[in-house]
Length: 232
Image (cartoon, rainbow, N blue to C red; front, side):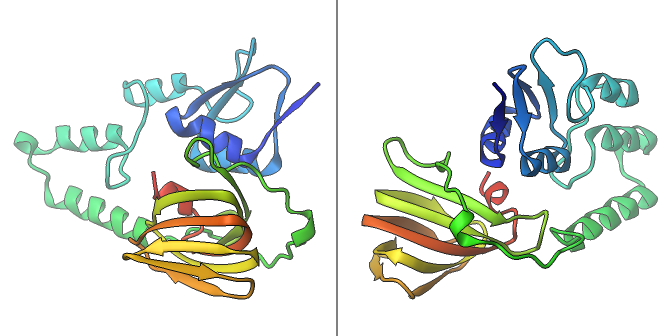
């Protein structure tokens, strides 16, 4: 029987590295497959020599002579940075090298999260809530993205809390709309209690504790759309 690997499950598996090994009967959901390609993941099935997604690290070793072509903090491949350093006298970057690096960094910063946003409809009653993998042990928290960086620069989704809490520091901006139940947010020494129809804005950099003393369902909008990777 085939086992479907969801987007959230793949995010969890990729937390420890870009190379992932799955059981032979595993298949990727469409959103998980798109995510794997965008993040450069290399995914193997058990007993298969060739990856089902991505290119094995052997090709990277031939290109630059190091185990993997990872990136520096500025988004520049290590192999490229090392090559440029070797070309500059006494390890001092020359003017042309600095210009190329600065140009690349600026272009990366200007690049939209989603190069081709699309208009789309989400049928709320067909959204399946998945357990949130970042939840503290014992906490019943569900979370499902319905708009991701593949569809737009804004992300959106639903989250549920059942007598649970989630401490969180946001490295992105978020707006929450309470769909049903009682939703609470603790921040800045205050406790905010919300009912269906209420809206709450959370600026980037804010530390909060999401929760509910009973049950709640909340619709959230985040910027940028790749909000979870911003918190890694």
